[in-house]
Image (cartoon, rainbow, N blue to C red; front, side, top):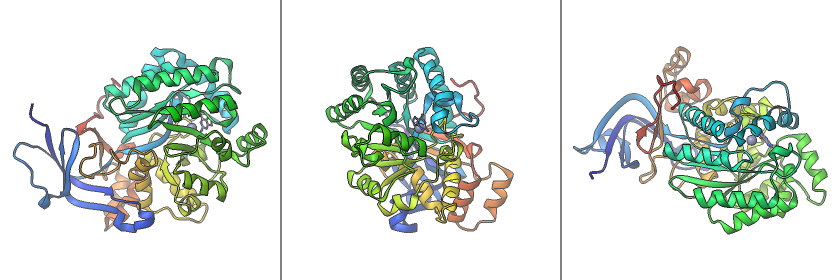
Length: 437
Ligand code: GUN
Ligand code: ZN
């Protein structure tokens, strides 16, 4: 069979490295560029003049559109779709009142399948091509998610919640059952096609020491799996952890004591973090997921980006739906910018763009496959329309260089700008299709 070859013409923008160290050199803007894709992988990305189009390639001319790598959401909960934008509570009450009742329903595989389909459509309609995803405590919820992600050929990471205390009884597992169920899901799904498994203890308050030991065993015995959890999101949560684990020096130390802080560990939120903990995160090569929409929506606090940068901790952005109130990584970037403004720090357009693409890929250790247009990477990308709304179009036309245009797009853009989302070199969205199949 002959290989499928496509040449896509548009303006291209992607990161080659981290702007925090390399400045503007880190981002490459190619006006009138060509992306050449063979069998779902990038074979060339450059100026039209430098990328000859082979005679057997299908040419797709999107000349005035902007193509960027697919966005990477480093922290999101698929079973929380139906409680997005729930009113009036902060973290611990929000969990009790909204989250736990919603997650209880996921023992029903039919509900899990329908929700996974809806969720993946939302991701794609927002330009998100890879996500690190919480399921619920029910293994069926993860089964449903992976089944749908595999059907759509997506690169996704998901895991079953481990939770053996401080939640309604229907949502509790045990150290032994959480180990066995997680192991069975790893055996079935980890490294299958583009899927990966994340060992997912919800957070320190909902796991006993015995369960956190089991989480460690899963990491030790299964090469390449992730650890995905929450940390230091809310002041009352931090007080609770102090009282539950009085022998620990801080929140991170709880996870350290159980050997959970390592490469491929991702700690969502990480707001109330000391200098010492930032150092330890960096030296363990662990990552954090910054979720500003959620942190503002449920009133958790302001993430210290400067500290994370100073200590060179790997960092991605996350929507944290349903604590976060949007699936759009553009909305996340907008709020991330404001969270830094409130702390008299400036998040540059390049840095924000990096965190949503290559930086996110590095944070979840997938940068060998995704995150930019390097030759050999998987062709997951987004076609952006910078003129999707009258206001954005008007503002963009006043900007004279790509960096200022990017800033306007990041601040004013949302799902209306996502014209198409491509997975492995094929368009995976159709905006006029509302059937969610
Ligand atoms: N901490 C523990 N569980 C959760 C959750 O579901 N969402 C958020 N935002 N924080 C949590
Ligand atoms: Zn979360």
